[in-house]
Amino acid sequence: TCYREGTPRVILEAMAMARPVITTDMPGCRTTVVEGVTGFLIPPHNVDALTEKMSWFIEHPEQIPVMGNASYLFCRKNFDVQIVNKQMLTIMEL
Image: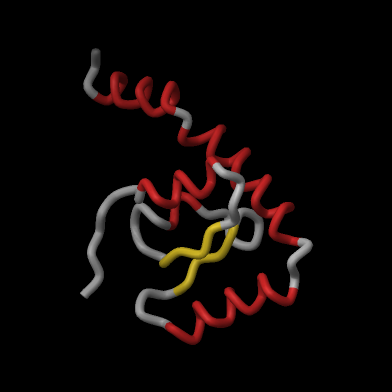
């Protein structure tokens, strides 16, 4: 079973700490990753894909700060509390 939870806070927290993200290609999660730039998306329940991406980071440690910085900038641009609050108020027509 795959549970949909919206945008997971743990991913946003990782991005805010300049960490690249490996997450499942599911609604909510997929909007947090620019594939190969801020992290990687993997199919749900695919242990081999997860292992492959984790190994990729072990084999390319120099990419961790590069992708982590891109992740941080993406988070600031798209998930800053001021931006999210403004979007919510617009949707609620307030």
